[in-house]
Amino acid sequence: MTGEVSSANNHRVGLFFTLQDPDGTAAIKCVVWNSQVAKLAQIPTVGEQLIILGSLRLYPQRGEYQLQVWQAIPAGVGLQALRYQQLKNRLQAEGLFDVERKRPLPTHPQIIAVVTSPTAAAWGDIQKTLRQRYPGLKVLFSPAIVQGELAPDSIVAAIERVEADGRAEVLVLARGGGAVEELACFNDERVVRATANCSIPVITGIGHQRDESLVDLVADFAVHTPTAAAEQVVPALSELYLEHQQRVAALHDCVHDYHRMAENRLLAIQNRLGRIRLDRQVKQEMQALSWKRQQLVNAINKRSLSAKQRLELLREKLVSLDPSSVLQRGYAVVKKENGAIVKSADELKAGEELLIVLGQGEVKVRVVISRSCDIDPDVLSF
Image (cartoon, rainbow, N blue to C red; front, side):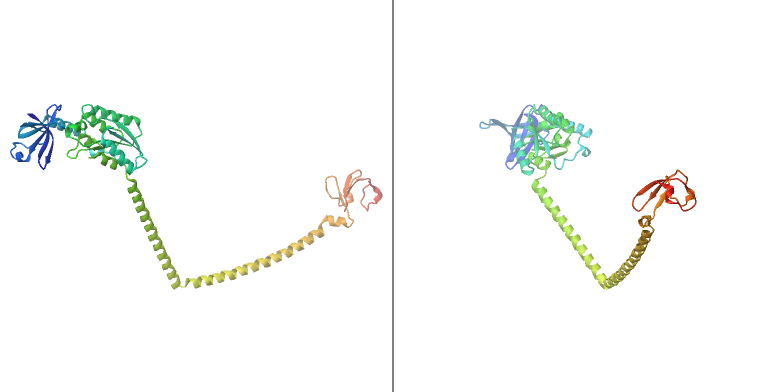
C-alpha cells in the first residue's frame, strides 16, 4: 500500500500513524509495534510518502480497520505535504504571517463572536469558561461545520456573518482536538484568507498541540485549545478584583508614606523655629501692632469728635442764616415775577406784579406808585 503519512504519534507500545491516499479522500490507521520499529527501512514521518507492507486487522466493535506494519519503504515527499508547503510559502511571501499585521486583542470586550460547531464540546467549554471568568459578557454565536469537505465554505460564511453584524469586538475561531485529517479545513486557503481579511481581531483555539495550522499563522493570536482561547479573550473578574485591591493597597501605602514625610517635615520646621526663637519675635511684633492699633483708634476718635463739633457749629450758623427763620420774626421777602428778590424801590415800575413771601403764606400785589422812599402802605393794592 502506498500513501502519505498525515499524522504520527509515538506510544509506549509502538508507533501509531495515519496513512492517507494522495488525493486526501481516504485514510487508514496504522501501527508499528516496538518490536518491529527497528526493522523499518524508513520511520514514518508526517508529510512523507511511504510504501507500506503489513496485514489488516478489523475491529468490529468500532467498525474500523487497522494496518499492522511490517515494513515501510520511502517513496518520496507526500502530495498533501507538498501542497501544504507550497501554500504556506505563497501566503508567507504575501506577508500574511508578518508580525506587523497582528492586532492587539481588546482588554475588556463587551461583545465577542464565536465560530465553531454547535454540537462540538468546544462550544460548551467556551461558554463555561466565559461564564466563570466574565459574567454578563454578550456572546454572538456563528455556527459552522469544522470538519470535512463542507467545512471551508461553512467557516468562511460564519466569519462573514460576524462581520456583517458589526457588533463583535473580537472573534474566536475554535475546534476541539482531532486527527490531522480532521483539521485539514484550517489549512484551506479560503479559510486562511477569510481569517486574514477579517475586520476585527481573530484568536484561534484549535485543539492540536503538534503543529500550527495556516489559520493559526494568520490569526492575531493563537492558542492550542478552545478553553485557552476563552481564557485569553476576556480577563477573569477575580483577577481584576485582586489587581484592584493591589492598586488600592499601593495607593494607601503611597498616601501613608507621603503623610509620614509631611509630618517629619513639619516637625523639623517646628524644631527649627524653636531654635531660632521666632515665637518671641512674633509675640513682640504682635504687641507692637496692638499698640499702634490703639494709637490709630485714639487718633480716629479724636478727629471724629472734632468733626462733630465743627458740624454742630455749622448747623447752628445755617439755622441763623435760614431765610424762613427771619420771616418767622415778622419780615417779608418781595419777589418779582421772574423770582428775583426786590432790594430797592427803584427797581419797581407801576403796574408790575410782585409776590410777597411772609412767615405764613404768600401774597400777590401790584405796584401803583414807585418812588425811592419809604413806601406808604396805601400805595400797594391787594
